[in-house]
Figure (cartoon, rainbow, N blue to C red):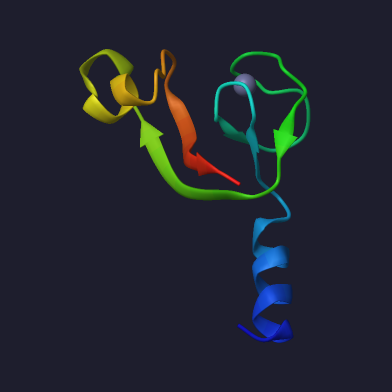
Length: 74
Ligand SMILES: [Zn+2]
């Protein structure tokens, strides 16, 4: 990737960050899911959890509340 692609990616991701504690994707501070103020600006993948109790992905990621989550941080 050249510098142009990197800048584009940065602009795209500027609005959203992932919580280091619970992996929730959010804007602003603090994390609406767990209240932590540990944003990670770099994350990979995104999953929307609607029914945490019935979702295999949510169980694997230890997600208890519905919302958008990062699959991998960093
Ligand atoms: Zn959180």
